[in-house]
Length: 161
Image 1: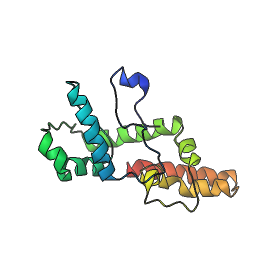
Image 2: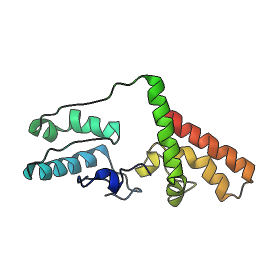
Image 3: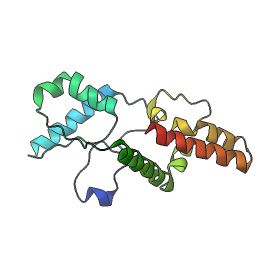
């Protein structure tokens, strides 16, 4: 629900988005391997690879711990410095947009009450926060309880973002 849309891509090829089964345990080392392959492909076509978004742990591993990447590429880092109130407001709006775009339905698709929240997509911000709500929903809890649990889940997603 938060991937760049085709319209937002505006014809610019994006790599590694939606390419892997979200239930598999895709590690930072897996990311390094696939990112380096994509970068090589882009460079071979005289393109400029831009690495944007994703998990900070993946980016840290790529830039600081992947010897292949460090030996082969020079990097320029860009970031936006923003006041915390502006950042918090932006992140809250982002979560609201994700909820409106169907995040709860997306998480519901692979919800497992005994799921392991340390592997695969289940460890991502915006997934484990919905566990109590989805468990209550699966157990046919009353609407008031589900509403309170959903609101609490969304609040936790905002905090964790």
